[in-house]
Length: 281
Image (cartoon, rainbow, N blue to C red; front, side, top):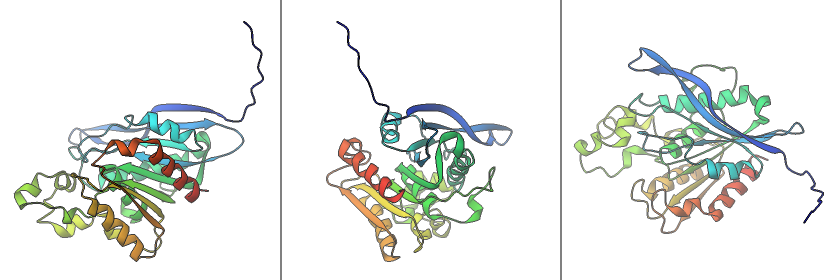
């Protein structure tokens, strides 16, 4: 059997580049240097540029894998975005604000190489889960120049839309039973100090501390049965943004626990696509 078909070309080819070095940081007690890397999925399209979404993996600031969610990120990219999943230093390597500095470095790198990856430098979104949700909110809200360190400082690290999943918004309000318990928490390890005994320092790592009326658009995803990052954390971020008059929506996923399967269903990803298409148009 033979068949001849005519196929209309309506979509560009999409390419994935993995392990792209975007920054160098101190390593091994400051004696060596190592690359921070990102994975990027982009269209080979000479006709137009696309909004870029930066993905930030979770892992309690203790561990992360930038490639873990590439199947979902590839689907997101093919709906009309450039998507970059970025690495950041974990808390055993460096304390806050190193993680935020790394994310902002990645955004500046992508703006500096916008032409190479067909990115519209005026349309950036950021999204991440758990610890990555915390860094998503911080990247969107914290405009202090002290967080912009490294290369490509002539480029902005600002984003125009943010979608944090189950984000720690105020680590000082976590339900620790005692300072001893708090000392071993991921939040204290990220900060490098006991969050119960160093409240002022801890608040400098909290997204709720950086809310202003000029915040970008937010869509917060949080499960109502989250036993790791309480649902009240997503509520606190939403309420702070709403009180400031910001464009914010809290999507409460009924019955979902932390990183539950509901977050990886097509209905959830359709909401994500719709949000970023509306806010990055």
